[in-house]
Amino acid sequence: MKWGISSYSPFRSLTSGQMTILDVVEWINGVGREHVEIVPLGFQLDDNPERR
Picture 1 (cartoon, one colour):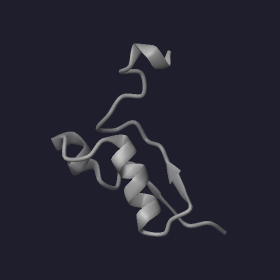
Picture 2 (cartoon, one colour):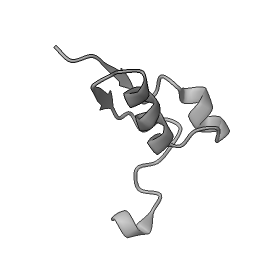
Picture 3 (spheres, helix red, strand yellow):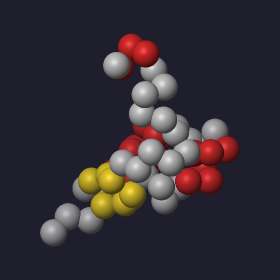
Picture 4 (cartoon, helix red, strand yellow):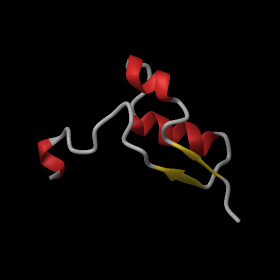
């Protein structure tokens, strides 16, 4: 079993602009978790036209 954290866990930090989704991924790695469940709350997955 791998332990992970959902991206909505730091929802307040995402919506306030204190963290980006990439910051969240780095934070989750820094606390020793092995995977991230990406839930698009507080950010959009399609907000960068270059990634489409």
